[in-house]
Amino acid sequence: MIFKSIMVTCITAGICPLLAQAEGDVYYGEPVQLHSRFVYFTSWKYVRPGSFTWRTQYDADTPEAEKAKDAGMKGDGTKPALFDLMDMPRGIRLVAQKCEKVPFAAGQMAADVYDQGKYKVWYNIDPCPEPEPYSTKDKIPPGFDQHIAYAESLDGVHWSKPDLSLIEYAGNAQNNIVFRGDLEGSTRGLHNGSVFVDPSSRDEPYKMIYLGIITEDEWNAFAKKYPGEIDTKARRADVSGRRMVNAVFGAASMDGIHWRTLPEPLMIQQAESINNCYYDVELKKYVAYVRVWEVNPKAPGTESQNIDSWYSIGRRAIGRCYSSDFQHFSVPETVFAAGADLPPNQVWYTNCKTTLPGCPDNHVMFPWLWETESDGGSVWLLSSPDGRYWSKVPGGPVVEGTARRDGRRLRHRHASVG
Image 1 (cartoon, rainbow, N blue to C red):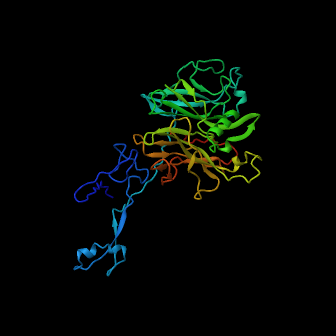
Image 2: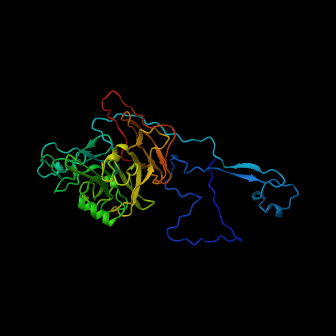
Image 3: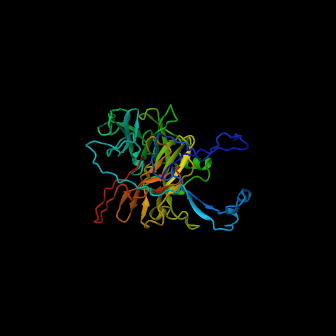
């Protein structure tokens, strides 16, 4: 297949008219606007679909005026029309390359970002098992009592955990912890924080989203301010007497070390997963990919009965939402879910959405396909031309999964944050 660049010029009586362009108007076609000096082919975005034409046959003595009547729109005419292909792509396919499994070196970690000449990671740690009089962890359900610690590396292999001396842990501040959600009387806690670098902000370029516990006053205030935007699945039954009502929260930082938590939830969504977010330089908006659920509405009159019944029958899926200010996000819309091509016991778990290096408009995901029958799974490659519509890249999973059915818990690994 030969790729050609076509420049189309409008000519009327020898004059190229100027289009009246309104601010924000976008025009489509060729030549294509590229955002990099190279292109990754993960979808058919930069491959023409090809075309065809039906060519009407004319007798040799047919006048040109007769040919100009567009007889092709009226039928074959006196002779059969000929089917003719135009720039039809052949002999090409997209295949996801299998990943090579390379064991981590001792102490090696998986980076969140490469920023300012360093690989950086913000990772979850479990709470101190010993009592801490300054902590509210005893009021926070298990899993929502995590903390965020920071590490950095020059080569991505050898990591250091700097002594930041910011936050106490087990009565000692000599550690690398940068965020806790159980201090100063707060019961918000933290479940799976995800950090990204915001290129649109100079004052606070580091942003984080995380799941936390929302108070009843916060719930009511959000419902009043944003009517119709609450995911009712976020209100779950208490766990061991501890409130289990969830929301997605945000935090911001000037340096990735000193964090300021945002006072209001970004959204009230049952998104208990490793969600992620980034600033889209094309849309000029924050875009988050979060856990959503596919589950049927309850029968009328049963709303207050067994409020957690959806959890065991719902299917996890991947949703997308956006914000112009990192203060309030839209209601997530499902962008990828398990379809009829999969068995009923398989669902898409974490999303690991990212863009390929140097190409902000080349959207990919590495979601984990969870096979609940074995508690195993595999990682696949998805691609999207715009971040909204997704499809699997052919070739099977990029990381093959394993599963055990002998009654022992499988320690699986899945991609999470891009």
